[in-house]
Length: 222
Image (cartoon, rainbow, N blue to C red; front, side, top):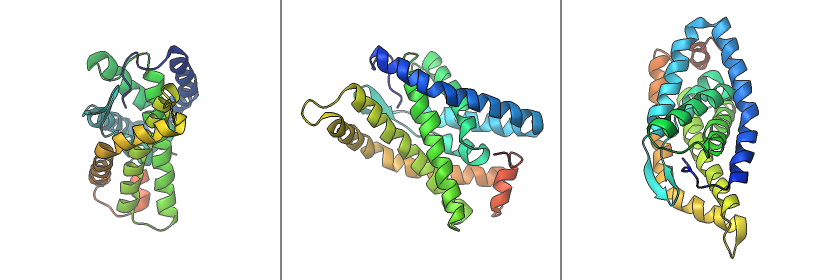
């Protein structure tokens, strides 16, 4: 992530666009509902998008045709739920492709699915699981952001492996190779993103330890 322009076969690009589209539509409907019912949430929506834009623009070369970077999608997933991040994520990726030559238009669907769909859904699931198990707010947020970040890169490895299977070990072997190379840079980045997300949410929530008040940032809109 981001997979660069022209790196995936056309059929794969079309398939990932089709897979991402329903999530983006659902996210747009969710944002519309949020803004209509909780106009005060607009600023935090914007902050969630800006957070993802800045963090995911910090790219570190990792493997041919791709790179490593934080994703920043865990913040919005914890506060608003995962569907909203499909829209914010595709906007982030579109602007980065057009303005920073980071990613691409042909690979926008693939990048959206890994960073703005898979990552946020994993982050949200981890957040809810952590709270259900009685973990602290800070630890639940940290795990959500860090594991959501790693999930994006695991899935990106799958996307690359599907396009370029290993001649000997096939798709499974290619996933292991791509994932192994990503891990060198991505594990420390995921840990850093988890810590930063805790700090940012803590600041937005007024430094409260009350789990419910994390949701109150956006009017407890799920």
